[in-house]
Structures are given as C-alpha cells and as structure tokens.
Image (cartoon, rainbow, N blue to C red; front, side, top):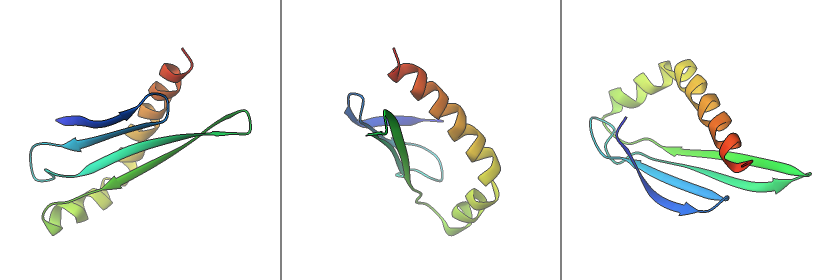
Length: 81
C-alpha cells in the first residue's frame, strides 16, 4: 500500500499517511513506551474516505489484525537491534 512516513521519533514513535486510493488521507501511528523492563506499543488509526470504505474496513478486520501482528513483529526486531 502507498503509505508515506510523516513522523518519526527514533525508538518511540512513527506516523504515516495513505497517499492514494479511496482511503487517501488515512493516518496511522505506533507509539512505544517503556513498561516493566519491556515496551508497550499502541497503534492509532484514523481512517478517512467514503462511508462504504470504512464499512469494508470493519469486515476486513481479521486480515488487518494479521497484518498488524506481522508489523509489530518487524518493529520488535528492529528495536531490539
């Protein structure tokens, strides 16, 4: 997907925006905070676009969760380097 990073704070925060298609302007971010000798990661997402696209995103929830889990694993690997 055509996401562009629009914010970055090394090891703590990344934010990106979708630049194309029906969800152009949607923004997502990860915030990482220390917690009990590890890290707590919070994902924020603001989806924009036509109402029907937001409804479709609800039904794609399972696929999106799988993608988020993959992203979090990659994030973990990068942060542990």
